[in-house]
Amino acid sequence: MTDDLQPSFHSAERNPQGARAAIVTDSVAQVPLELTRRLGIVTVPFSLTFEGIVYTDLRDVNLNHLYQRMRYEKDLHLTTSAPSVGMFHETFMECLNQGAESILYIGLSSRLSSAFSTAREAAEMISSELGSQPIFLFDSLLATVAQGFLAIEAARLAVKGIRPEAIMKQLAGERQRTGFAAGLETLEYLARGGRIGKATYLLGNAIRILPVVSIDDNGEVIPVSRKQGFDRVLEEIIGYVGRKITGYQHLSLAVMHADTLIQAKKLQTMAVDRFHPDEIYITDITPTMVAHAGPGIIGLAYHYT
Image 1 (spheres, helix red, strand yellow):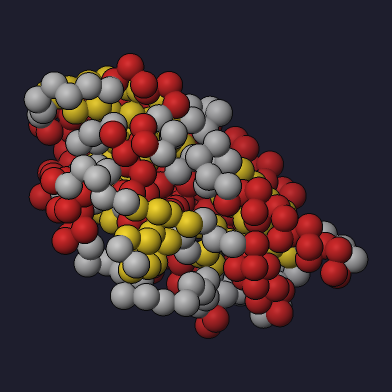
Image 2 (image 1 turned 120 degrees about the horizontal axis):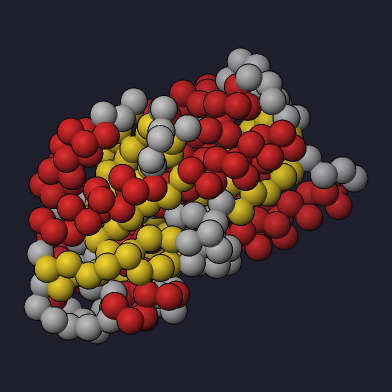
C-alpha cells in the first residue's frame, strides 16, 4: 500500500497534564502504541520502498510476505527513507501549535542514519522563523526499542513538568544504563548498507552460525559473538544482558523481533525467569530496520536503574 507519510499524532494525549515539553522520536524507536498515546509521544515515521510500494513504519504491519522474499531472494532492491526536513518541520510546528512550550527530539544514533542531522536542520529553520530556539535535540546513540526506552523516560519526566535541558542531562546518564543485544540470521543486510561497524569479522556463510550484535557508546554496531542455532543465540542474548544490568533495582525489558514470534515468546519467558523485570514488552521491529538488519532478527533491549 502507499500512503502520504505523516507523523503519528495523538492529539488527545499530546500534552498530558503537567507536560510543558512535547517529546518526539523516530518510528524505529518502536515505542509501544499504548505508551505513545498515554505519554503523548509523537513519532515520525521512516519508510521502506520495494517494487514501487511504500511501506510506512507503524502503519504496515503484515509484512511476512516481504520478509520471506528477503530470506530467499538475494537480489531484492530495497530502499529506505528517513523523515524529510519538511516532515520534521511539520511535526515540530504541529507540536508547538498544539500548545507545547518546547520540544525534545530523541533521535536514532547519528552514526546509523541522517535523521538526526535532518531534524537539526528543521529545528534551525523554526528557530530562525520564530526568533527563538524552542527545540532541543538528543542523539540517543541507540537504535530500536533501546532508543524507545529513552523516549519513554523523557516523556515521563516531561509529564512532571521538567524542562528539556534537565531531561537531556538526565538522559545522558540513562543512556549508560540502556542497550540491547540482537541475533541476526545474516550480516548481509548490515554489510550492504554500510552499517556493520566493528562487526565485520562476523561475516561468513557457515551453516546456522548466527551473529549476535549490540551497539557501543559511539552509536555503532559492534559484535558480541557467533552462535550455532537460535537456542544458543537466545542464551547468548540473555547472558549479554545479564552482564550489563548487574545490580539493577528497577528493570524494563523489551523483546524485539521480525517474523520470529515463536522465538520472541521463548526469549520473553527466558528473560522473565532470569531477571524478573518490572515490565517487559514484545515489539515488532519496524520494516525500515529489517531492511538494514534482515528478516529473522530477534533481540532483547534493557533499561535499568
